[in-house]
Image 1 (cartoon, rainbow, N blue to C red):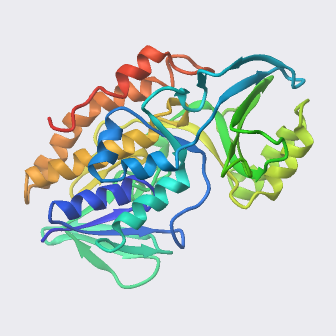
Image 2 (cartoon, helix red, strand yellow):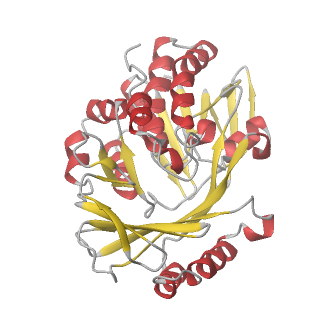
Length: 369
């Protein structure tokens, strides 16, 4: 039985582990967090990615926990409504679509619970060194003894540690898109009822949506910026920077800044894409954001993770014992799909991609090819 180490316990890693187990592989997932990660924005499962979720037997469960927005308001910088829609929202698209919007943490938990009895999880740990020879890939960890695996898959996100070990520094692969995104939770101090609010003020703006039966808000705050200096990338410095920018807003800036400072799940990172000529090297392959992050601006990061996981496992199963052929086939099948979905983030800078582009991109791959 072939052994596969997957670095990253978010969405792509556990989904890949599920399908590898189904194909007769032994999968181990290593995740630096102490458990499945809470927090995060609402994510979309669209098009062919819905087929992946359905084939996992999770579609009805995903539908039960989906967000149920009634619409959205668009505000001017002073907080006055200038437009509204009961047909679509910026976060999920058309409300009558078959696509599913749900909280990232709900999808992470769902997949973890679906795989925990068949997959080895190493929480609170991470890969520190990687070497390979004819016998396999030899991996050192932050904690515990070194181990050898047949294959190693990097599913550890935009700032992938395994990608750095196998391919070199991320600066050679990152394409900055000119902005940063912060996501955090707060009490529903706006008393929103299944209704989103969107506002832009100068080079910054936010979307606010209620979740958990309107008891909580998820706030997504974006601001234009060139890549920040290294000493501003730490969580503490980024939190202060975001709070200062929020405080300068003309509507609800003070309360939003306080929410950012108090949030237990504060997140902030650059809006960026990963673009690489190859997604594999030797016994190592890249999956999801680690290999082809489209950025949240595309709305397709989660769907790419789901589809990429299914396709990679399928390719490995079709070429037993020949990871070179499997990885080549994986790239052949996925790269056109990735290119279309990455383009969604760049075709209309500062605004959502066209409905036609999204409709085409989200379905532009067959799982059975």
